[in-house]
Amino acid sequence: MSSDPILNLAAIPEEILTRVEARGISRRDFIKFCTMTTAALALPVTMVGKVAAAVADARVPVIWVEYQSCSGDSEAFLRANQPTAAELILDLISLEYAEVVMAAAGHQAEAAKKQAMEKYQGKYILVVEGSVPSGADGAYCTIGGESALEGCRKLVKNAAATICVGTCASFGGIPAAAPNPTGALSVMEVVPGAPIVNLPGCPVNAENLTATIVHVLTFGKLPATDGLGRPKFAYGKRIHDNCERRSHFDAGQYAQSFGDPGHRQGHCLYQLGCKGPETFHNCPTIRYNEGTSWPIMSGHGCIGCSEPGFWDTMSPFYRRLPKVPGFGIEDTADKIGIGLAAATAVAFGLHGVASCFRKHDAMEEDKVVKED
Amino acid sequence: MLEIRYTWEWPVRITHWVNVLCMILLAITGVYIGNPFMTASETSQYIMGWMRFLHFSFAYLFLVSVASRILWMFIGNHHASWRAFFPWLTEDGRRNFIKMFRYYTFTGKQISYEVGHNPVAATAYLGIFCLFLFQIVSGFTLYGQMAPGGFWNSLTGWLLTLIGSQWLRLAHHGVMWLLAGFFINHVYSGWLMDVKERNGTMSGIFSGYRFIEPKDL
Image (cartoon, rainbow over all chains, first blue to last red; front, side):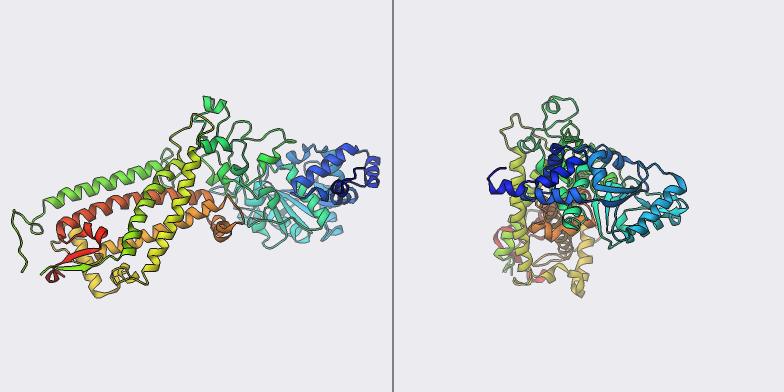
């Protein structure tokens, strides 16, 4: 072991490593997982030991429910490979109910959910995926005869904490986009005041979800959040301010269309409507799919998928500004503005011409008015 | 006999011209930030960087200028006072407002001679001050996003939760164009009144003096 006191503090005790190894997880994977998660949480390296101890012992019951969703967040989580979800994450948590991966179905599954809720009352972590429809008394989404609205309220109230994964559960997302036919709500709107943390994104970044769960296991509480209930470690900075193409933005180098020389040279995607300057997320530092890539890295602008109301306010996705309400699809705010300024100039120009010809209020001939 | 009246005190004149300078610079740099019409040929250039630097610097200057003018509304003479911007609160003001409005719309022949602002102009300036405040608040709210939890963000972050940054940005653009329209109107009306009133409307904002025929008032 190193004699450096910092590294000693960061070290994971041998006893924990042996225990983890006995469960069939390689030491290397376990150390990688603990250090990466510590880094994702923006914790100092000295916390690695504490994180490892919490992770090695934990088995927190989790109920994962889906309402108006596409299961994209479940998919993203199951594809989390750091280490493989099947190995560590499903070991870390005890998944009591999850529609996508559970073997049970129908009434049997519903009974398992009810049982888990009662057995671990006030102790389980609830993960919600998808928005909750409130229209027609919740009739748009019912599971086992119970509306999502009712089921969500009950599950959130009995949970130790609720984690909303994806933009739909966090802010209503696509189902809540105008005209919102089902009256879709976010979980925070359904159960105001409950301990809820929002992990928006389409889909959620699995590493942020893992890090949030590890934070709960290590410190026994949800991570610090901003005004929208998003953890600061993951949503504390704008994409734009950490973007790898930022130097091109400051220089004034922009791709004007897909495939043009600027685009091929990796210039800034601002002119293609990139919403990085409007979006708070840690995509540039953590990326997706084990740090493989993320939208801007692959040459497509950010669409602001993790921001509230993104479908309505971040579109058109290839324009900088939203459509001006009441105007045609091709009219931008600046086109309308130039029209307004031109109309003003014409109107006052005409007024000026008319004013030149009005009588009685100007000296009509070359004379001097003498003051006494 | 013509009287020389000291109407616009120096803080009024200075803030007026600082506002003009700021509005022109903020509009040009702002349009560039919204739609970068010049592109750099080398990465070592710093076009957007300078545009943003100028935009933020002049935004601070504009904030100081507008705040000083608002302060002067409570210190300065009665032409500069906040009361001058609510002409329709008095009987005289209402009468002169109608008179002036009819003159502008070619339905009346008489100008309401004023030493300070005419009531129609004063009402427009009240609206303009509201637009100034809107631009300052929306601008610094958008600016504050670069440092969550920082000074501007903790002061204005609630607006982002309430409205959302994209709608705020759209409104910031829209109000710029309204101010551009006002700019045209303002220069035109100044010229028109300089011709029609013959009392130093234009030179007044440089010198502060106006030449008033007491009989006309």
